[in-house]
Image 1 (tube, helix red, strand yellow):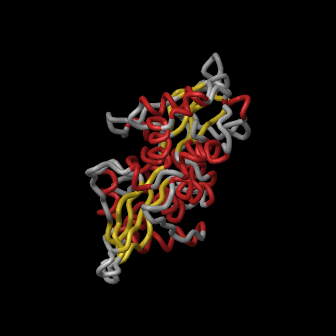
Image 2 (tube, helix red, strand yellow):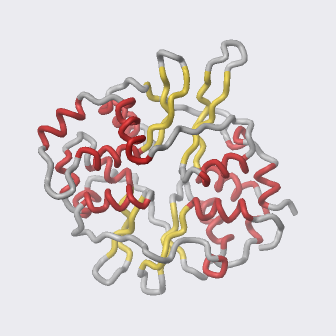
Length: 312
C-alpha cells in the first residue's frame, strides 16, 4: 500500500484544484475597509494580493493580519479613542497593513508553484507556521505572475481523506501518538473581554480559542472571523465588549465545533474531515466535555509528513 509520504510526493498542488474555481485577489492599494468587506462577503480567511503597478503577486492578506492591526491601534491598558482609531484606519490601504504586520512578526510572503508536490507544500506551511499558501504560476509568454489559487491545510487533508486508502488503516489513537497540544491550553469564558481573546489568538498564533464555562466545559469556539465580524466597521471599541457579545454577531452559517477524545484514532479524524464541508480543528474533550487539548490541522499535517512507512 502506498505510504502517506509517497502519496504526498506523488501528487502536486494542481491535483487538488477543482476543474472550475473562483480566485479572489485583492489589489494591494485597495482601501483596507474594502479589502475586509471582500474577505467577509466571500467567506474567506485569506486572499492573495496583487500589485497592479508591477503586475505581480504581492503577498497574502489574512484575518490574522487584521488581528495584529487591532493590537497595533489598541492600547493595552485602557479603552482607545474610537474617533482617533477610525480616522487612522480610514486612511490605510492593504499595503499599509502589510507593513504593520511585518513590524510585528517580520514575515516575508511565501509562495509555491502549482506543480510542486503536496509534500513540498505541506513542508512549506509547517516550516513557516502558515494555514494557507498561495499557488503562483508564471505566464510563459509575458513572464508575469499568475495567481492560480490559495492552498490550505484543510484542502490537503481533505484530498488525503478522499483519495488515500491508507488513512483508513491509521488505527493508533491521538493520545497514544501524542498528536495535538495538551498543556497550557488557552481558554476564555463568555464574560471575557474580546480584546483578551485577540491577544491570545495573536500571541499564540492560533485561529480560534475555546470558550468554556466556570467548570472548564466546552461551550463554543471564538475564531478570528468572529473577531473580524465583531469589528467589521472598525469600531475598535467593539473589542472591549464580551466574548458572548462577539459570538452573537456571527452569521447563521457558522463553522461547527468539532470535538474528539484522546481515544479516537487518526482514522476517525480523517473520516470526520472527509464528511465535513469544513473542519478547522478538533477540540479534545473528556467524558464530561471538559477541554483537554487541541488537535490542529497543522498537527495532522505534521503527523502525515512524518509517516515514512505504511504502519498505523
